[in-house]
Image 1 (tube, rainbow, N blue to C red):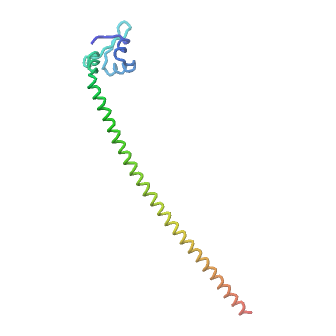
Image 2: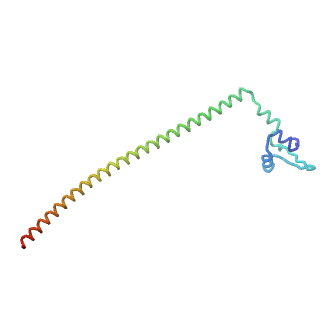
Length: 147
């Protein structure tokens, strides 16, 4: 692997300076400074730049099949996720329905109880009025008898 100045290395690899700095720090790219110029090269363990670019060029049919396969994989994952979301929403909807029904049932029971208590209160008031009338009549009779 030959040494290249930083400008030609950036042109060949399309790396940014930040990426190059990170790769140098990780030891994936070798760097040396000669006469104030920075020279870079890939380590020997990495494939050569030209060989890797040739490996990326595939036959159009193979490339199309791979792209279609990836699209189908993504689509199937999306469909599964969609089905899971729908099932989750249906489950949540059923839970909310049952919660609303139980709240309505509790409301109806409370309403019946309030009606019952109102009737009891009305009967108690009427009974209290009758007791007051009897008490007054009794005292009126006692007062009349004293006179």
